[in-house]
Image (cartoon, rainbow over all chains, first blue to last red; front, side, top):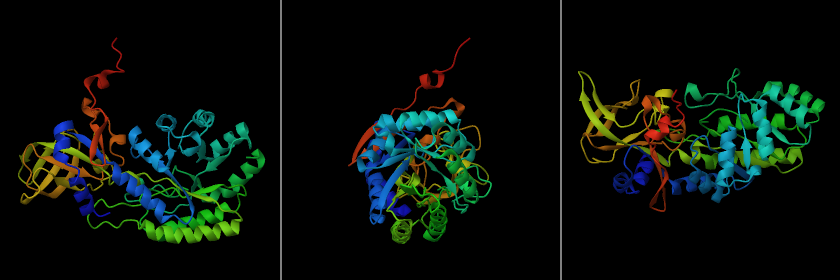
Length: 183
Length: 219
């Protein structure tokens, strides 16, 4: 959507009445726009079995989570608190993917105990996960393919020295851990 | 898979997907492939955005041929944040003061980096409109917040003539707006309103002084 469409959509929301009622500074969200973006993504990928996991770090209000839950979305959570918020909103644990970075192993254990899916982005944690759970709990790994994308240098997180993800060049190491730990 | 936010075009995405497909064949028990996210939305009028329909076509085709080779149909996952909520949101602020210096006209508003940090933290462009004076003659302003710190929302921005008391809307505030807000300068966080089918609902109360002192322990 272009900025001019965003502006006319915004102007259709009777902003002056909203300001009069709620005051400023104020965050307003157009729920219908959120729903239409969700549908747009689903339609674009209607040819595959698509699962959208909304990254709630973008906007965590429980009502927005519920709005997306109603559309059939899952959640991508990056902290145990985001996991808890998702559960409070009514998402089933299996619909929540937990993708933290630089967390203590205890936080992964807490997530497993809540029944959410765990996405591991560090070889050290993958080893610890293997020691504790073996093949009893499935987990995902977050691979960094080192494709540098991103609007500003601050959010370019795919580079070789990024703290995010397990490097795609370390797949052999990952496979050895999987074999040894029967992950 | 992790790439980074704001993937511009389907070409970059396809390159990343191909790398993921290559890695995935070594894992026999997969249920899904998660492509992360990074779909780009418009912050400026001439911004290039991700054509998700085009991306859908290209990735669907590649994904099907991968699944065929893999031997099973897998699920395809995305983790969008910005794509779903960025354009839906705006931060509405009031103009407290107009200040003219030798080279700049400042519009000082009742918000700041404590409420929306992206312009200061990432140097992000957020489009701003003057909703109180939509037909006013455009003038050039620097829009700044009330925080005692670098606190600039926009430099040399053309806005319909801004008067003290006008309300400005800072666009694309739906993603990484409220969630990155804080209480610097002991300021209160704003309220949140969700508009559904034309009806506004208060979904977060404005903070009060109690929220600032709640966890302070007096000794």
